[in-house]
Length: 569
Image (cartoon, one colour):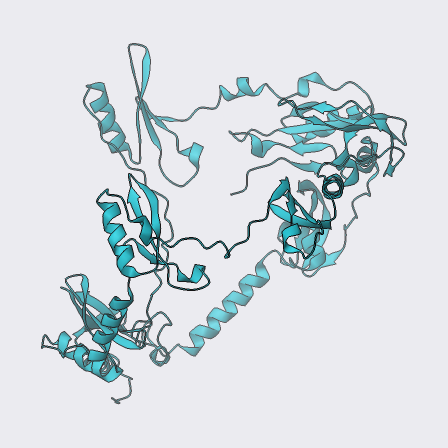
């Protein structure tokens, strides 16, 4: 929700009523004095604000009697109504359409807050309890409604109580508010057959052997606890790593070539005994060649080259990224390359703006540095404006174009900006512009207009020019009345709630069954098809076990209660 902000309604006049807590009219006047906008006063009415604005623009003294009363003195007159003794109606403070009755009792010169209640009877009852020293009721204020997130289904659905999972069909039946897996089958026909048997309470067939075999094969591929297959991390051979948890921390035991060795050493580690070091896989020296480091970021790679040639590889790490600078014949050349890279890629590289021009400002020299409360220094530049004034500003303010003058350009725009275009006498649709009503909405002009029907309305200039508003609203009423009359003429022979064309419509896209007037409900752990047919605002229906029986009941009810319904099944 946007906060209420003051807005300019006329030249040099700002409406600050929305910022006041109690809705007191406030109009602030600011006029340019010595090329700066200066506040000369705040007033209760727009007439007083206009009068003192004109005096301020002419450099004349303003009328002190017109100024607004100090807000603190004004607030003493703003009080919330007292409903009963020690009960105050605080509803106007919240403006949410609910009652807010605040109970505050006073004992021995001390005021005590009791609570806020929705109705007067409850407030009086708790006030009397508080005066007697008894415990009061606790009122829970209604919480804000939050949207519930829709749960996503993990498996795709194949009919009622049937789900697909990896090429198999799983049957789940709900009993006593819980879902139980009946079985898993290879084909959809077998799943439907066993689903129907389970719903009738008859014994079902056993799951297929292929699924049981797949489960056994899957369990064989699983490794024992705390043992992991790390073969992919190495070039050749099988590698089983063992990790156990001690005192809430994970400890690496070792890497082994066979599963038996891994299980053996895992059990020893869990028992607190020493593991067998001979079972561990020894690191091979030829798997990884370690090159000597001569200095920070400089590595000697002479051993990888043929002959007696010396070579050094240089690199620099900056912002977590390694930059390879190349290969050099000596260590001094590698260090020199590192220094040049750091010098050219320095973040806060000094910039000289002396002599450069930014808008109306010309940079003369470096000014006094700005020191923040934390002791951080920022560079400021001394600039001279075209009007003759000198200011100090920051580097980024000049380079980004945020600061282009000493401030005179803004004041010149406010004083000499283009006047308002007069629309008096012009016609827009059914509206004829009479005059400017003197109010503004975010600096937009509002015009008083006369409609063809005789009514007067206030319209923004942009709505008139764009054609958004063409009348006072009578055209819209006429169109709505005509459409309502056409609708009544079309269905004048139909009784309300007996339109046959609605029965032929397809079901809602959120329907569970895909059929109109049929839904799925749960009763005592079982699922039923619920039929509900509405005729003349009365509902008729019932519960059925299967979809075919539900359709038969729906057609029977339609033929019974709808006299014009065709006699078709």
